[in-house]
Length: 176
Length: 441
Image 1 (cartoon, rainbow over the protein chains, first blue to last red):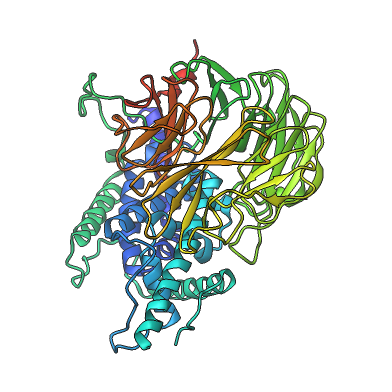
Image 2: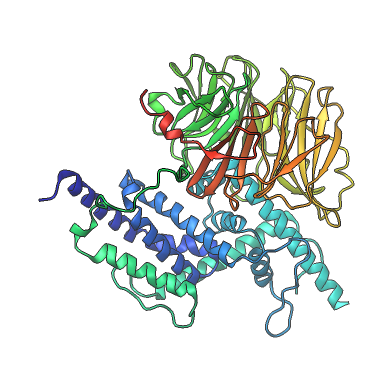
């Protein structure tokens, strides 16, 4: 016979599992906005789900599973970005050229520029523009002070502008 | 063809909205066409990936399948007899999202906000023997979003009822007897979404700055200034201070300082704003050297401004400028901010994080692997590599209450912060177990 504590734990497990499964589509969207690639996002969701499951007993309130899992997922996405992040100095990036040799479109320009940002900056951009989250919401999700979110959002903007401007200047010189 | 000119903030934000809109479309397409739920079917790793991450994905799938699909009785908590713990190993403290704020009170004590308690230390972070409630019982479930500590009797908080809801209700609470009794007021409607900063001169007079969220833009909205003359029972709107940042301090009854955007490209936004009329109007502070920086420079507010009295203040900028090694520019004023003198400290490395608060006699600059301290207002510096701090994690805050003793908050990961303390001026650090401070004595 299971002890009452164990039984309560199993009920909580069930609740966590149900809520995790129900939240998977949302999690995939969230991860895609942070990683900008649905396949990478799928990897992240799987990794986060495994991690969440292993830590499920740390969750005191099963009703808070969505926020809890989102935070784990955000962390996994950030680490995934760190793994793939190549050190970049923001001032003079290479111009972004598509396979046909033509100058890339706005999307490609941004894609390349965002990839050069620090992982933390990429995460807040995805949450802000992809999920339309406010600074407060991002802070709550990521578990960091609002001032840090604002700082990262602003530095992301400034770095993006510097990267894009440098790319355009270089492109202009190339055309000449 | 891309335009051959600089991209402005408005264009950038519009581009980002379009870009992430496309990302969202790709997500929806993928979700609609993807394999069935990973929780109910172990899927094959994508052959085209063939990378280590593919293995991670497979391992994760297996782990989930094992955890979720096996009989329930296998899911009980770990039995005793797991990995043993080496008692001589350094104490590992888990990051905690409830450890959200830290500071130095006007009376000189270090404080942290932790699990809705205010923990105070009068010995530089070695002991945290004073534990006070940070909310009234009525707001026990709220999230603490801002704290200002005048002393162990007088402190104020901003509390968000539902931080994940756009319609969050924000309460401003104040106590004059160490948290035994609280006066709660609902924050002005303009302050419901944006961050809040508090600063009090004494138990009666204080200021609040809140930033309006701009629903149509990621750029920060107006910083609105409010004042209280009754200890926080009521707040009167004073004025707006542009789109500045939120670090704010009042140096006297009428003078308010706002640190600008935490990181700006030189020349884009004012770095520091000052109001001499209780927040009714603000003007940029002229800091020597800033105007001559190349436009590609990135400037961050590394410190303050902080004032030890109405006349003496300091602030610091971290400057990354093309063709120049990275540097910290320290500014001092002895005339209430009318003039600022600059001392340049060339770090030689791009600092990833900075102390956001340095008080007393010791100035500190920090990157993930380096620490530099000055005990003479920035004239001379001692640089060393601290031990005990994680080498790959940013310090979000560091402060010394004396030359030897200090504390640092380290952003371990997105799960939260960990507090470290030092007793030897910052050369060696160890984690602080705040949870034990909350145990019944």
